[in-house]
Image 1: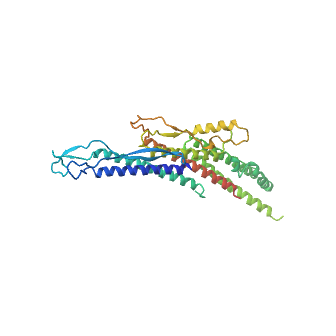
Image 2: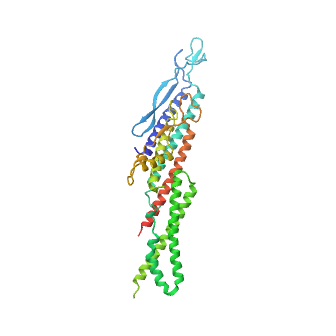
Image 3: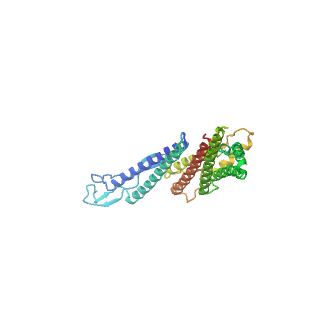
Length: 139
Length: 103
Length: 126
């Protein structure tokens, strides 16, 4: 495959991976306070996402793929909220194991990576244009 | 490479300049020979600027030359080539006119 | 030194730059992949040296292959900064700087080719 088209394909895979990551992060953030319905019930469990490099024969480069979307198995923090419908006998509620600060930091990084991939796509596209422009007569 | 861009190789100029100098030698010998010399000079100068542009471009692609130097060299070559071609065309036209003159 | 064909050199450089662009794309796409090591192509001077050696080794008048086979070695870079716990060595900033270099060289390359093409066409006109 023509190297510049390969670059487009690879950067495209990067865009896809990062936007999936952003989706997971926003799901975590949206459910940061989602407790269960009944006393002692499990709240929302934080989701995680991991990437893997895929050596692509056709392009000769490495695209990126979603390896897995999993669940964060860390323990649920307990908060004292006796009035909550999910409060157990002692008045403690299991809260989702989502740390808003960590999610925000993750979101920033995902945005940054997304922008970088977008820049690569723009540049590859411009280089292809320049090559085709060589044929255009009179600059 | 330079061979393909040489509208005014010194050889190519010999015929028109000889016609010009013959026709004019009767009238003003000095002017004619200096004109021919000027034309020959222009030809060699064009070849030199073209060679310089080619070398600068090669150096530029290898990363040994400054971008601005490359651009300047190439533009100078284009300018002198353009002028040389204009001169060549004029000479050819003049030669054809002279050859059409009634005897 | 043997006369180097300008258009051939430009084509070679353009191919090398495209491969470098693809490598940069791979690095940027895998900036968050655990265990991924950043790659880069061998420098252009090395490619030219290989071609020169290949050309002198073959018979006179035989147009050699060498680097025109476009197999530029893509090697793992030495990590410049401390390696992260995830073993990922991609630094987005240096990748984007490299991309800028590629762009500038490519623009110069196409501009040179265009200018010399114009001159050839100009001098071939009747």
